[in-house]
Amino acid sequence: MKLNCDLGESFGVYSMPVDEDVMPHLDLANIACGFHGGDPVHIQRAIELAIQHHVTVGAHPSYPDKQGFGRRHMALARHEIVALMHYQVGMLRSMCEFLGTSCDYVKPHGAWYHDIVKHAEVRHATFYAMEKMSLDLPIILPAICDPSLLLKDAAQYGLTIWFEVFADRAYLDDGTLAPRNQSGAVLNEQVALAQALQLIQHQSVTTVTGQTLSLRADTLCVHSDTPAAVKLVKALAEFI
Image (cartoon, rainbow, N blue to C red; front, top):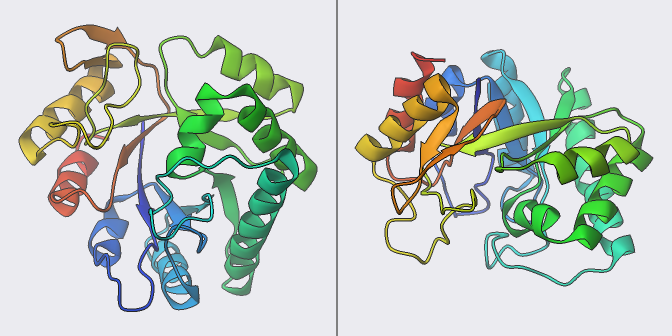
């Protein structure tokens, strides 16, 4: 299972200063594209760090919502979703090329990421946008209890899905993440490490009510704004 983290999210005087500390321990770096976080300087620096540490770069596009850090749901038309995907992935791909590397996958951020699973119209618009880019890039989406519909719809557009689980977020009984405004939704370092090891070793997770769910995944994420992100990434890198 590959270890990933959302990076390049600082902008202006707003700093999320974990990129340099976590990058050496990652397999995949999901780099912000400016719509929830990131600016040209910090995006470029994140790509440079990924190159330095031989980390695969992916685009981390978002709904246009810096005030809400991309975590608020937005009602967007199909053509708007397509344009948002093309604009952000196109930018990051170009930045990568200028620096001598490539953008090798896409992971939608925040509300967009979850809306793809919940809403067919968002899912099909996103998958269509990916197909129209003709770049043959995988898309990272959340591992869920029954991924058959996601796989069926992705196949219509010739897309490959990399399924993702989370070290630092609590899970509900339906296999979705507990809302961030719910107490205990963001796990502390000790609990997160135990959950991550369970996911890595057994491909399962224990929910907030104590149920055990099977979640088969290709990659494990630690959020860069989790308080213990650096310690957690360093610890997990030894097990992956």
